[in-house]
Length: 292
Image (cartoon, rainbow, N blue to C red; front, top):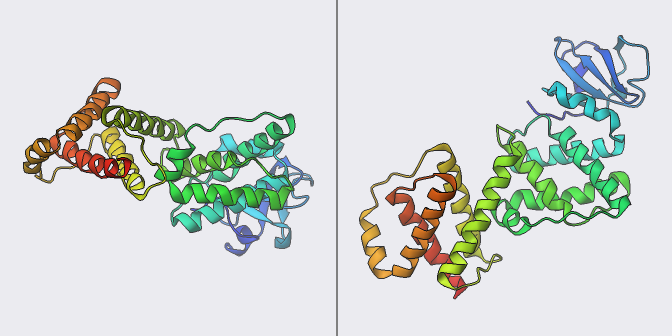
């Protein structure tokens, strides 16, 4: 179920009032809808009245959030309403653009990040984003949404966050797409991509053009290869007959691909089969053509 819902649905969908049971702040509270399901409700003054009470005026409800992890509910208490509204809009836009359900905690975890980003901006603190290239090429849709998120934040708060924050927003969206919601796995995959790029550049004496279509295609292949290696599933299509031919015709590419495979084994204890080695060679060959 979506983390953010449209105005007023909590009561209207069930055909009964929403019972407000716990204050989060003056404009946010925990409630129960008509079916007894917990819901975080946002609306002007909703958390101001004595608890518990029946909320019968649906027009006061600006947002409802279902399936929230209790750990994140109280997070809303210290977040300005404008930032939380902006974050909810970003989450809804992301669900539509990415055509998938995102982690329901995203509106609050993202709002927490955006709120701290505002504080950093006011204090003059700038964080580096060393993985911006990799995010842009491995996750182009999320990167584009990250840039649009800065516009949404500015519209709600009047504050323009630095362009580097678009990458941070994209990482939150990537995270929310994963069932585990594990940002460490996301960052790990990006770091591995960076390491593999360095191996290829060193072995083939080239500079990868990360703005090229060939690199985007290579990066996407690498993204899914890393996912397969993490999960212990590999490609098996009996195409290894081509490996000997590729090795003879393109010895440098073979040595390069083997160096990447050896990196996987030594650094992460991942073993690549011959099918994966072959496809890695094909993608390195293509990206090298652009690098020459």
